[in-house]
Amino acid sequence: GNILISYKCDEFEIIDVEFKTHEEVTIFMSWCNLTKQQYAMEQNIIKKFISGQSIKEDNIILAELSDRAEAYENEQLQLQLQQEPEQEQQPEQEPKQSEPEPLKPITIDDINETFKNGVSYSTSKPFAKGTIKNYINAFKNIHNHFKLNDYREVLNDPKSIIEYIYEKFESDSTKKLHLSSLLYIIKTLCPNDSNEIKINHLTKVLHDNLTTKRSNDMDNNKQDIGKAYALMAFMEQKNDDVFARMVLNYGVLRPDELYNLRVVDNDNDEENDEENYINITTKMMIINKHKTLRQYGAKKIKMDDEIIDMVKDKV
Image (tube, one colour):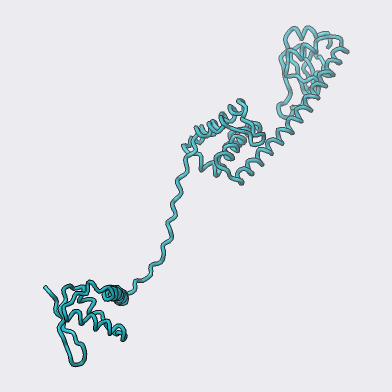
């Protein structure tokens, strides 16, 4: 049952104190370094223990014992912390950065859908049906060559596509169409300033070439119209339709190749090699003077009997 403790009251007197619980022993053993006021309190408590009186009804003593019990626990905790070796402070680990999710592949279906829902960057208006069809067909040519399941990488570095376009197609307008479709896909699905500037430059060069070519074609058409009127005046002056028939029946002739056309009945090369003439004996028209002489040589055209009959009296 009870716990018996020997307690030294002073230098000469030692008494035995009996405790009912371990808690009372702990509190009793924690008394040390007391002030006079505290010592008086201790004497009061000890007397109660010795006389066997209960302290449960003494609020002053109970409050004092409670405060000392708390102080004792704190003291023991501090001693425990001092005895434990200090743990090395671990460096704070930087939070792991989450890896970016892989980019979704860009398929030919994605590209076609982009064209179908396309909006012009210059006008902000939806593409016309003809533009959509042309762009889809242009990129279909590219896809038939590369056959990729994912176009993202080649769109980020379109050098191989550009080289293919220039090697595959001769016409500047066809090159421009394919580059325009490529440029739109890059701007919409894989924006890259460097690539866009490069392709824009290429399309501008092609556009300038086409503009120059159209201008030259218009000038050539004007020249052809002028030559046609000159030929009509020439035929009217000659007052016969043999030249008109030759122009209609032999479309490879240019109007200026019929001016001063001679009719001969021999084939003397030395005499005729610098002339444009019709030989009624061989029924051949020989054009020695024409624009592409160096490239193709003299033109030799077999004439039908109707034309020969019309010109034989002009020998």
